[in-house]
Amino acid sequence: MTRFDRVDELQSRIRGMEARKLDARTIPTHPALRTVLPGGGLREGTVVQATGSTSLLMALLAGPSAAGRWAAVVGLPDFGVEAAARFGIALERLVLVPDPGRQWLTVTAALADVIPVIAVRSAGRLSPAESSRFTARLRQRGGVLITAGEWPGADTVLEVGESDWLGLGDGHGALTEREVLVRSAGRGGLGRPAL
Image 1: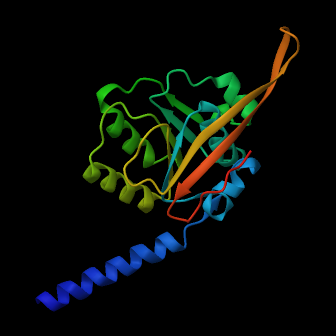
Image 2 (image 1 turned 120 degrees about the vertical axis):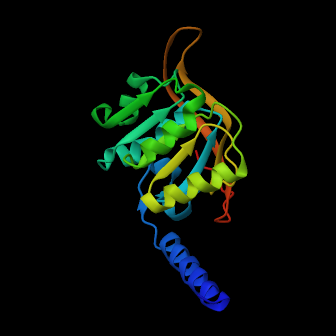
């Protein structure tokens, strides 16, 4: 094989990868988040960084779960299943790995082979090379990764800005709802807030 043949082969592979990324399907998510996500939902093969609230993470998982997809939550021991059920996450299709230890990336990669939507809190620093390899695997499988913390090269970054709890009267009563302002940034030219 000549050098030019190798270049043609590599260019063909790149075009194939780009076509898959552009043709990625969108997975619906919580209606309140449609305005802050590219295409109004979660795109297969992408990484969404969600910081500031476990409620935001649950809202992102609710749509795929309601659509019948399996979801996994890795490295979030305080992830409440009762709250998840109230968000509409189907517990019968939810895999929880509360403490994967130092092997969190290996565990997450193994789950990405079989589960289409994964939420993770990393338990250590992630190198750009590790991030790239994992993202390539995610694209190949058509999965979505939602991170509760920083992820190098995330496609979309969502962050809870302001937050208000409603329902308490004059020092008594029960919390009934929470209103948050979500800011977004990413490759899709986002930046619109959502309530």
